[in-house]
Image (cartoon, rainbow, N blue to C red; front, side, top):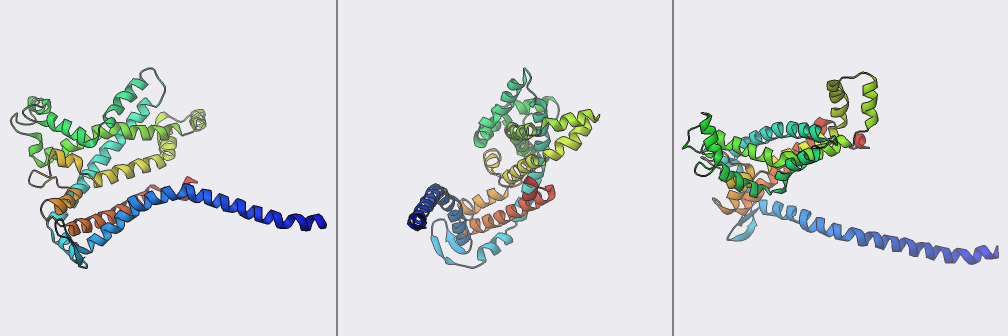
Length: 311
C-alpha cells in the first residue's frame, strides 16, 4: 500500500509531460503544411471572393464593395457563352481522344520486354516539355512559312499551301487538340500503367484458369479494377482542359475572330486587356471554381468512386 501511494503521483506528471511533448511534436510537423495551405490556397481564394464583390480595377485598385455588379457584368458579356461552349467542346474532344490513347499505350508497354523501356522513354519525352514551350514548338511547325505540316497537308490535298492551319476555327481547334494529345499522352500513360501494375496477378491467373478470353478479361477484370485510376486521370484531364490557357494564348490568342476563346483566356482579357477590371476577372474565376467543384463531384459519383470503395 505504501509503495502504491508513493509511485502514483510521480507517474501522472510523466504521462502528462510525454503527452504534451507528443502534441508539441505533432504541431511542429503540422504547422509548416498548415501555413503553406493557408498562404498559398485559402488566402488566394478568400482574396478572389472579396475581389469578385468589389469595384477593383487594374490601375485604380480596390474602390470598395459593389455587391453583385461584377457578376452581372460577366453574365451580360456576349463572349461568355461563346467561351463556355468552346471550352466544353475542347474539353470533350481532348478527353475522349487522350484517355483511350493513354490506356492503349499503357497496355502496350506494361510488360517487361526488351524494347518496352525504349518505347516508354520515347513516349514520355514530350512530357518533359512545358506546355508553353511545346506550344511555341508547334507554332513553328504549323507555320506556313517555315513549318512542314502545312506543306504535308497541302500535298495530301487537305488544304491550300498558302493558307494557315491556325487561320480557321476548326483548324485552330484540331491543331491545339493534336498538340495537347502529343504532350500529355506519355504522362497519362505512366499514371495508367501504375494502376495496371497494381492489379494482382492472381486475378488474371484465375480468369485464365476459368477460360476467359483476352477481351473478357480486359472488360471484366482490368477495367473494373482500373476504375479509380481512370477516374483520377479523367478528373485531371477535364480539369486541365477546362483551365486551358497557355496553348491557346501561344497558338491562337483566341482567334481567328475569337473562335478559340477559352474561359480562362476571357478571365485574362477582363483583367489585363479589354476591361482591365480585376473585379470582373475575379467574379468569373469564382464561377469557374464552383463549376469545377460541381463537375468533379458529379464525375466521381458517375464513376462510382467513393471513399467506402477505396477502403
